[in-house]
Image (cartoon, rainbow, N blue to C red; front, side, top):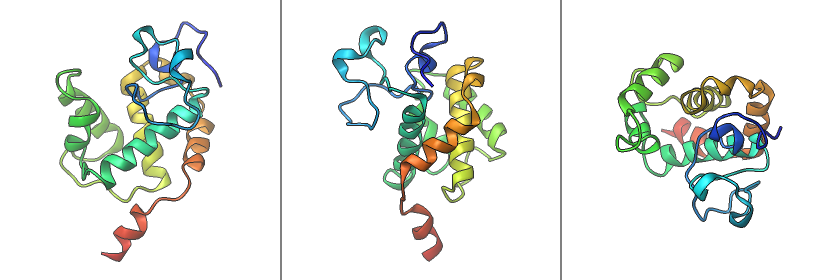
Length: 157
C-alpha cells in the first residue's frame, strides 16, 4: 500500500509508521533522498508501508541485540527521547498495550512480540491513522526481515 498522496499524518504518508529519522542507512525500499518528499526530509520515506514496518522491526531488533535496550524504559529513552516526546507517556501507553511493565526485560523477539511492538509504536506515532495499516502488512514486514540470532542466543543461556 502507498499512502504518500493522502491526507494522513506524516508517518503514514511516508510509509514510515515508526517515524524513523532520516539517516544514510541503505534500507531496503528506501526512497532516495533526492526523491524524498517529506517536509525538510527529516524522516525516512519508504516505497511501501511494509518496508517502513520492516525498518521499524529491524531497528527494534538492533536496539535490543546490539544496544541492550531490553526494557520499555531503556528502549523508548532512545526511540522517543524526552527532548522530542513525552517519553513517560509513550512508555505507559506501550506498556499497557503489551501488558509488559516498563522495567521488565523484553521476552524473546518472536514474531508475535515484534508485531505487537510495531503496532504499539505505529499507534503512538500515528493515531488515529495507524488503523489504516492492514494486519497483513505487519506479517509481510516480519517475513521480509529474514533470520536473526536473538531467539537462538537467548535459548542457549
